[in-house]
Amino acid sequence: MFADSAVQVVSVAWIGGMALVLAGAAVQVAIGAGLSVICGPFLLLWFGAAAGVPLLLCLNLLVSVVATACGGAGVRWGDAALASGATLAGCAAASVVPGLPDGVLKAMTACVLVAVALPRPPVPGRLPSTASVRAGIGLAGLMTGALTVWTATPGPITPVALARAGRSGADIRRTMQPISIIGYGAALACVGPPAAGTLGAAAWAWPIGAVLAGTGLGFYLRRTIDPARVVLLVRVVAGAAALLLFAAVLR
Image (cartoon, rainbow, N blue to C red; front, side, top):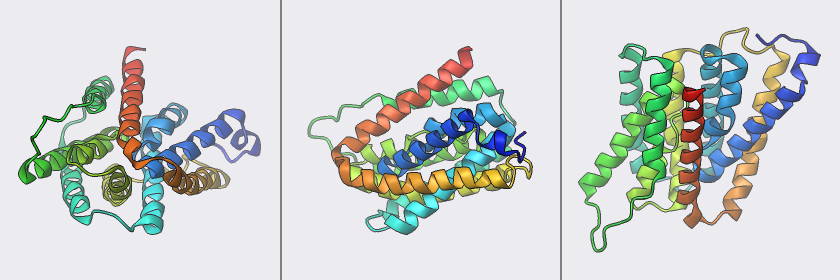
C-alpha cells in the first residue's frame, strides 16, 4: 500500500501523520498514555486495520522500551508486575475469543473510555483497602490487554486505575512504561508483525525518527507538567479517544 517512491513518502499527508506520531510519543512519555489516541486514527485510515494495528503496536512498543530504558527510576515495580500479569491474561483471552464486529469493538471500547474519563469523587474518610486496590489494577490490566489485541488502542484505563489506587502522577507516568512493554509486546505476538510491504524500506525511517524525537520531547514535558495534573490529562485523553471511536461507529 505504501510504495518506495520519494514522492509518496514525502507527501503532505505523510508528514502530517508523522507529526502526529511525534506528538503522540511525547504525550505517552509525559503522562503515561496517548500515542494510540493521537496517531492511531491516521495510521488505521492510511493503512487499514489489518496493516495499521501491527504498525501501531510496533510504534507503541518502541516508545515504551526507550522510555523505560531512559527513565526507569521511580517505577513502582509491584504495580507494574500486577498490571503486566493481568494485561498478559487479557491478551491471551482476546487472542482466543472469536472476532467481534469492528463496530461492536469500537463502541465497547468507547464506553469503557467514557467510564474511565468520568471522575469518581473520593468517599470522605474512606481509604481503599489493599485488596480493592489490587483488584482494580488487575481488572484494568485485563481490559487493557484485551483491547490492545483487538484495537491497538487500549486507552488510559490502567493509568486511571493507578490514580484511583492513590498513585501520584509521577508514579503513573513512569510505571506505565514497563507495563506498556508487556502489553504491546504480547499483543504484537498475538497479531503478528507488520507485513513486509506495509512500509517501503526508506519509509521506515520516518515513524522511527518521529517516535524517538517525540520520546525526547516527552521527557522534556515531564519536567514542565505538574505531576498533580497528570490524572486530569489522562482523563482528557480518554475522553478524546471515546469521541473518536463514537464518531467512527456513527459515520
